[in-house]
Picture 1 (cartoon, rainbow, N blue to C red):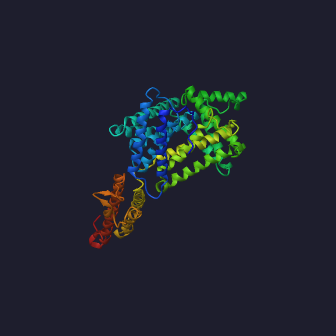
Picture 2 (tube, helix red, strand yellow):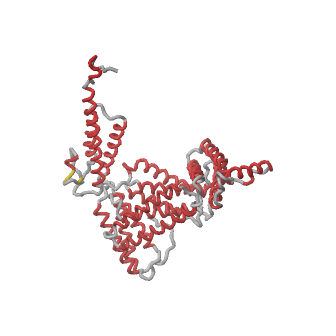
Picture 3 (spheres, rainbow, N blue to C red):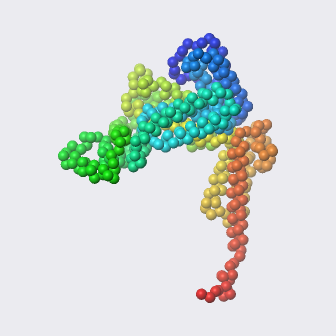
Amino acid sequence: MTDSPAPRIPLDPKEQPILDKLLAVRTNLELLKQDRSTYVKSQDVIGLYDQVIEQVEILNQIRTTKRLEQNRVDTVLDDCFQLVSLAYMTIGKNHEAPAVYSVISTVKRLLDHLEEAHFYSAKDLEAIGQMLHNARRYMDRGKDTYTPSLLTLLEARIQVCEESIARLELAHSHLTPDLSPKYEKLVSILRSLCACNTRSKFPEAEVDEFLVQLKELQTELRPYGIHAFSEERETKEEKLTEMIEKLTFTQENPEPAPAAKDLIETLLRRNFLWTNLMKERKGRIAPAFQDIYDKLLSIRNKLEKLSLTQAWSLRETDLWNFQRQLDRIDEARIDGNFIDALGRPSELYEQRTLLYLLRKSYALIFQLIVSSEPVSEALLPIYNQLTTLRKCLLEVKKLGGVSSPRELYPYSMKVGRSIHMMSSANVRQLNSIDNMRVDGKFVVGDDIPDGQGSVTQLLEECFELAYELRNDAEDSSSAGEQTPASESGPEGLTAA
């Protein structure tokens, strides 16, 4: 593996043994994530985590007077923490402090790119803020369990991210309630246009539709004194009309603060210019940047596919390969620009296209981490089957239930079959859930994997739904067998 590009400071001879041991740990972590013959076991992950922390403690003792130094030891240490963090998610320990490391690293990348882009949605900050809140909660909960070395590192990284979010929120604080939806719409259009630009066939008609929406938004923004281009109004009549519009709408639509006006005006102009540039280039990337474009496109497509099949195919440690590839590409930029083989910066079209793919890929990794279930991969087959069953039962209930208890038989059998999908070299075939549970726990081989509470709760929900549907069906059957007296004959009639 190649480390991310970074300045190399000469290595202190005292740190060489630390580097050697960290390289060995990283190799073991990589082998662990690549082994698909069995599931990742908690004891293996925790043992490797302990080895990493041991080297951190030794490193801290050596660097008492040079805390800010960064060399290859730090790069490899980051790799180890990233892998350990994702491995903790793989074994279902999503809410433990070590799992926070990878989350914060991804969040930091996203925030850096939002600050660089200047234009972002309030929903972006809301999702990231919630994740940071959860990360701090998990970290605080682990204060009595995990070493101060890890907690101090996480605290510093979380604080950096919180300060970044505060700056981003302040930059948009001047947006008024009536302008915020229009700004959000412009952000959405800009991102959709960038997505169109990476299609295998350039969608001319779709881009034209977005252009129509931009013109409509431009019309809606004119009363606020916001225009894409000042030269659009040239005649005296048009200028007079514009002044009247401003006077008419001053009371109902007061002109926004200059910061908000400039923000939206710049974004509107960028959308128009980007649309024109796209229609001119039609997805054609300069040959000098075709390789990096193909690589980023491939990463984005693989991550999108994973997001569709996550429950069945994702092992969280797989995300590390994508993270490192993206980090290397991101850190290879010079002054924010992508550079070709001859050291020349990219043109505007290539720059924005490549940045979109890079940022979209980081966002997909963030979504995959956020949606990761706190269940060990050893229990994921049964968890996924029970999730599917619950959806089926809820849908049946939504559509009015079943007409007889007998119709619930396939769902009852499904519960049994979901258990059988757990079969592996380490697990004997079991005929029922009761046979799997030992003292109320799901046992896989000799292990009691994490995620017991989630699977048990899901199982109970399925049984409860099936029980409700059965009772409703029995009540309906009983009611159908009885004929009301009022409908049986003349005796059932009452005088008006």
